[in-house]
Image 1 (cartoon, rainbow, N blue to C red):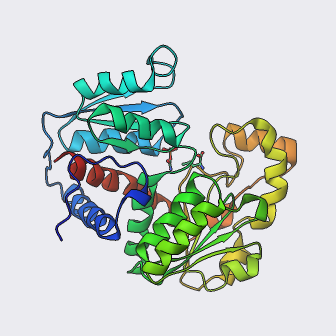
Image 2 (cartoon, rainbow, N blue to C red; image 1 turned 90 degrees about the vertical axis):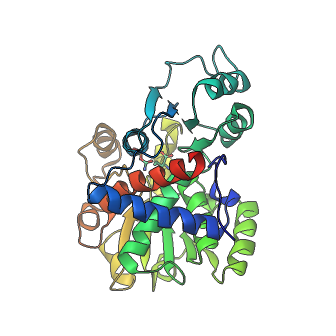
Image 3 (cartoon, helix red, strand yellow; image 1 turned 90 degrees about the horizontal axis):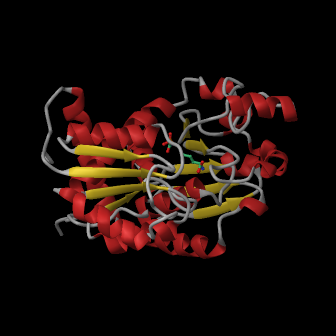
Length: 330
Ligand code: CP
Ligand code: NVA
């Protein structure tokens, strides 16, 4: 059956079928090759989008801005604190105002409920640029990168190490289950994803011929992995006070040379970024001083190694976000 996503919001991958995700990935490849060969693609000339960021961003914001302009659209950026949203104007009211002026709305913030509410009231497609629960635009970039580097998605052994119940852990589990990758969360039990989401993903995985595994055992969790993926240990919006506990829980799950050696020889290392792989950031330097550690979720050695594909992954954010906007607005 033909895929038609026109008018649909992109809020979480659970709302999309494998065929729809496949379509978005193929469209991303087309846009990537047009961009690389300098073929203009202003297919959405005359449309306008607004980007609402209640949390900071480099990749997501720049991807929406560049992709929007490449497609010929006008782009408005509203940073945290520079709109009335939430403080003086409710989400339903904000959504109805923006929906009168814009053809599409991107939202990055805290609750998943809020982005769902924006979509319910705005009357135009809403794209989730990250909430505490999900990060669905990142998923397309990650799937595209895996397919480019390893030649396929189905049957790939994917291991996620770290906070497996944050937005990245949740989203990657869903993405793998939908697209036929065997997902393993390798994490301390305290940071396993919610059982309800695990059950949902196991049911989806069963339909797509793959598995969802949770383990605390690093050797077991990383053996035969084709992809080793990690994320920062403390996510945006979490209190400072959680650092000490998180460092003690997650240090055994750091991606280092021993982890990569235990995975397949052809394994790649992935990270949504930003990453604390050295002390060249203010937070990295501060943590180094307080806890005497110079690397966190991944060692600098692995981050800078040939197996690391993190910057290809970052570039793919833009091509895939372009595909999402085009598919839902065309
Ligand atoms: N990966 C990602 O979403 O990066 P930003 O926080 O820079 O947007
Ligand atoms: N888990 C991270 C992802 C950043 C892209 C965060 O929410 O800060």
